[in-house]
Amino acid sequence: MSHDPVYVTRPFLPPLEELIPDFSNIWETRVLTNSGPYHTALEKALAEYLEVEYVSLFCNATIALVTALQALNVKGEVITTPYSFVATSHSLLWNNIQPVFADIDPVSLNLDPDAIERAITERTTAIMPVHCYGVPCDTDAIQKIADKYKLHVIYDAAHAFGVKRASGNLFAAGDISVLSFHATKVFNTLEGGAIICRTAEMKRHIDHLKNFGFVDEVTVVEAGINGKMNEIQAAIGLHQLNYLEEALCRRRLIDTQYRQAFSQVEGVTCMAACNESISNCAYFPVLIHDNYPVTRDALYALLREHNIFARRYFFPLISDFDMYRHLPSANPANLPVAGQIASKVLCLPIYPELSDEDLQRIITLVQNPSGEKK
Ligand SMILES: Cc1ncc(COP(=O)(O)O)c(C=O)c1O
Image 1 (cartoon, rainbow, N blue to C red):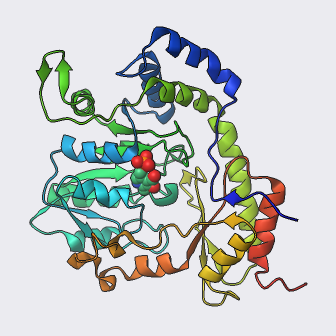
Image 2 (tube, rainbow, N blue to C red; image 1 turned 60 degrees about the horizontal axis):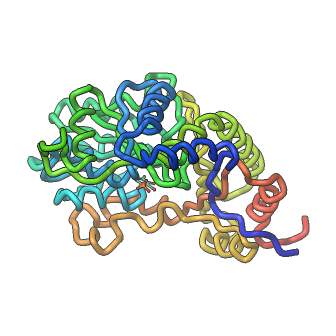
Image 3 (cartoon, rainbow, N blue to C red; image 1 turned 30 degrees about the vertical axis):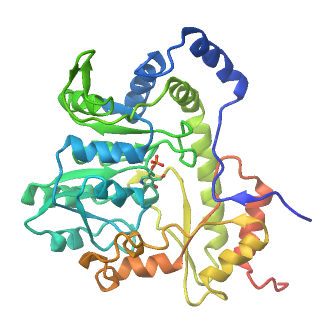
């Protein structure tokens, strides 16, 4: 029997009929963008949901990262992780900043604070860590280093929407956090993103930067960019928020079922559950070790043969791409843990509408990749 393709994720959307009245309103008023009423309402709703004061919406997280670096006037070298999506480091290149890769911690898969400290030079001005898969970085240790060496901290929190941490709001850490609302994310506005910052003054600055530097009709104060989110996206975001808890619940259920199913499978390990934070279950990465019956890539191919499209996030490492590999810090010898993890990781499908049948098919294939009758 052939099955429909199952991708690593499937964007969640609210029922179309709920959106139509808002779309009609936007058509009628012709307020399509430039900080309209839906944009204002979504910034407010997100600030409440995320329990932060200052949110600036963006067209996507990549432009938000580029803008965050501009807002803090970051130059020179920035220490970052090779184990992420390329946009993290690309935002540095777009600002003529040199990325300096540091190795990751083998448990959290986030930047290892000791490796950060070892990578600091006279040219270092900031740290750009990623809460990879939504797992919180060791923000206390990172802040200690930042304070000691007077560095900015910009968190790439693209994966972390909906993560709650007992020991204090994750998004209050550092100078700035950047969220992604891309179609594949836990909360999506088709494309979209946001910057969370700490002061009203910084929000004003960021809001100018995302609107070409305009302050009023005749005044441009800096060379800003067009980073604005439009009204259709903001309206969709407002509806998405109403379904968020339901979507997170379903993700957590799938996460639990995978964990139970793989607990006895030799050669497969799941990410350690983090005691002090509630996960958003944005991803379900597993590590495929040498004592598993087949290689990681063979399992990836086997799933594809069954129309299941798992992804090897994050392989290759960012530091292995052509525009980075010449950097001294990109040397694999500098990044042994990241290299190991990238060779073992496979992200399995997880999304609210993943059916029980498809979930079971994936579990069965991972439990028994050689297809032997047991
Ligand atoms: C860690 C990380 N940072 C940044 C981005 C870029 O986000 P966007 O697609 O919203 O530009 C992504 C993915 O999409 C990501 O996974």
